[in-house]
Length: 212
Image (cartoon, rainbow, N blue to C red; front, side, top):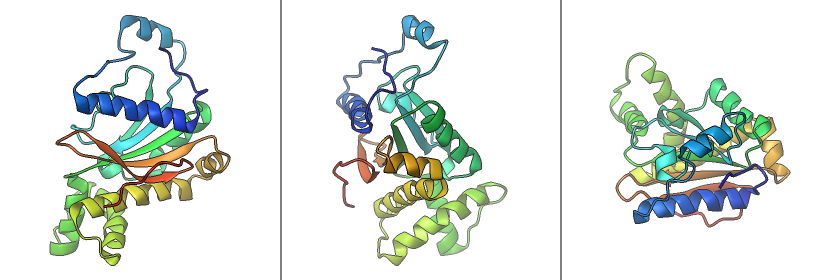
């Protein structure tokens, strides 16, 4: 099946979530991964979602959401931290490719979040540009702790939610599309052990949000 950007944000989210449910159940369909699909999308791409996630090797988007070629426009950085390149890439996905859904994907046991907690607790600041990643995660950890949210899953949920808010705060284009109902932004926390992705933030989409 060739997906198109005629999907609504809700339809795009349901398509993504159903793929994750198949992955968790061990019944993946591996859609859009054959030679026919490869040929079909060679002239133009029509992804139905922008997926902005952590670079962790255990977080391969097309696998955990059981999708294929041309389905997801993927942007990844360590700790899903935001820079201008990320903002430009996300805006390209929603403005040029007309994606109705943007997903921020975090996960448990995130090294960037752990390094940030260590830096705040013990002064163990990494060297090189890893330090820049830690500095960008720091506001999320501080906000979580200020609210009394100190468990690892609570801090992760705060970081994902904060990333969703940052995207909307810094990208006027994205915020306008969400306000118009053309695009939704959803924050997901992925469990490395069981493969489930739970919703911790949603903007422009009426879906249940899991409390930590």
